[in-house]
Image (tube, rainbow, N blue to C red; front, side, top):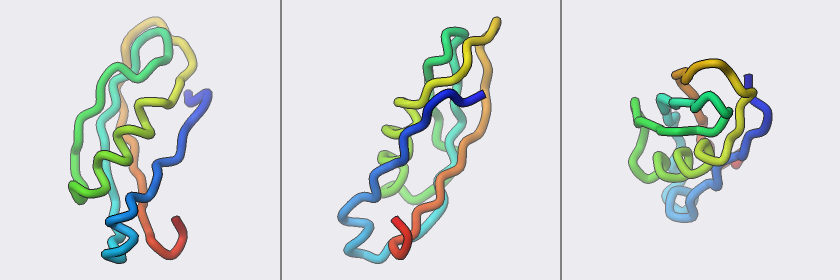
Length: 80
């Protein structure tokens, strides 16, 4: 369960290119609720770094074990 999340910054170069897209990341969460690792499942390379940087700042409820899930970010220059 997510305790706090950070919205990714829309990269300026992507904005100039009017680039939209979806980034999917596999997120490994440590038992203390911190993001331990991220793995790119898909998305434009220009957008991937912004998504990964943001999700690494997320915090989850503590758990007994490490857990893995998928997070999806939608980037749209008209709404970001």
